[in-house]
Image (cartoon, rainbow, N blue to C red; front, side):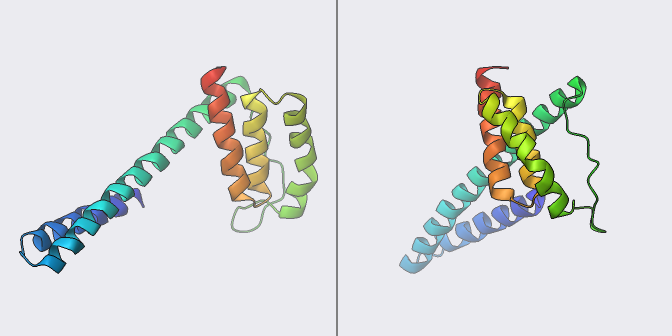
Length: 138
């Protein structure tokens, strides 16, 4: 997806250059809008890629320490855990964060629990907290 977005950005910039050289006022205005949107898209793409790199770094650390939760939940045919089973295990991960709110490891395990429960928004938020804590207390 990142490669497709990068190709799309290149094509949009190329089209913006064509419009910019057209000489028409409307074409120049559209070209400027395309350039601004391209800069925003590049920023968003780089931010997401960096988030993935940071997340993968935490996974490798926890894996080397044996700190990743064991995935023994029942799964659907798609590979996603059954939400009811994931929800049953969730309170233990939440309690771990409440007991040690400065632990990036606890926050990362909570993020995995959120993800297993199907709450991607909170999973990303907990992952960001884990990354922030890891930076300040590796």
